[in-house]
Amino acid sequence: MTTSRNASVSPWTHVEDFLRERGADRVPHPGGTLLAHLARVARLLAEWGADPDVQAAGLCHAAYGTDGFDASLLALTERATLAGLVGDRAEALVRLYAGCDRAAVYPRLGRERPVVFHDRFTGGEHTPSDADLRAFVEITAANELDVLAHHADLAARHGADLYALFARSRDLLSAGAWAACVRQLGPHTRPRTSTAPRITGVDHLVLTVADIERTVDFYRRVLGMEPVTFGQGRRALAFGASKINLHRAGGELLPHAARPTPGSADLCLVTDTPQAQVLEHLAACGITPEEGPVRRTGARGPFLSTYLRDPDGNLVEISTYPDALHDPADG
Image 1 (cartoon, rainbow, N blue to C red):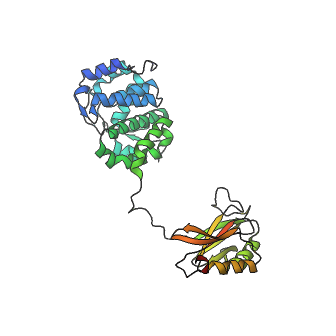
Image 2 (image 1 turned 120 degrees about the vertical axis):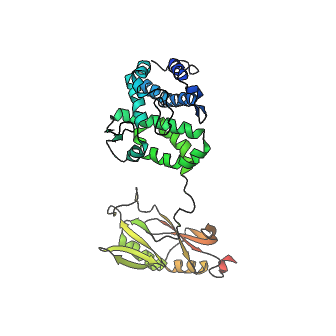
Image 3 (image 1 turned 30 degrees about the horizontal axis):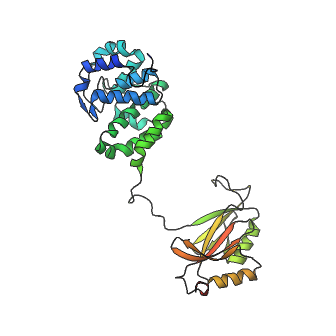
């Protein structure tokens, strides 16, 4: 069979006629009838580039009933009838899908290889081939996406769990199927405010530098930070309740940033010292500011900032909030 016909004409008309004879057009289902659902699943699979056997299995995936849908159109004793209509492989995929014990199999998807299937009809276990497993997950995605597209309550209840299932099984999905999962199920995965961690501050940051001792001297002398040695001789600079850990370029500790490079950082440090006094101190240290004082906006609102560069070229912003004190530079 081929799927290269006009898009408005189903390549599976004879199969749809058979399903209609078996009452699929009279079985209620989200989005209308079971037949309409089956046809939409087959179309989704075609859009994702599934081969004809997988499309046919998608069209007939509920023929023997499923773990989530009890109604059946054929008895298991009629497997030869369906195989004569869609072929042996497509029928075998329908049988695989129908027999899947979802409570046992779904938790294994994306976590185990090979994936052992528990058959809800026989109680036995078996291991599908990789090709059959991929077809099963693809049909599962098409089925669930169509159901949820036509049932808002089910989407709200199960969207996040299904997204998690397909996310961890994404290596088994086609690119088209995964993109559809992200598009349709992704909005259900937004974290609730009550469960998100509450970030209260910055403990430390890391600078990658060419010369650690030169950096220590600069931040001690110009910004009043306290040099710290910890661990097995590691160096850091302490200030307030935070610190800057130092990595030597080429000798970074794992794990580290993807591209640790001296001079790539942009730091904003808050002080309660008036900006006029900051300028006097920088002049005494022989430091010419890049810019400032200028008005900027920080995490708590407007402040005044002076910019300078450290020995590696990192941009350092020294900022004073107006509520810290009455700053003459701020009028």
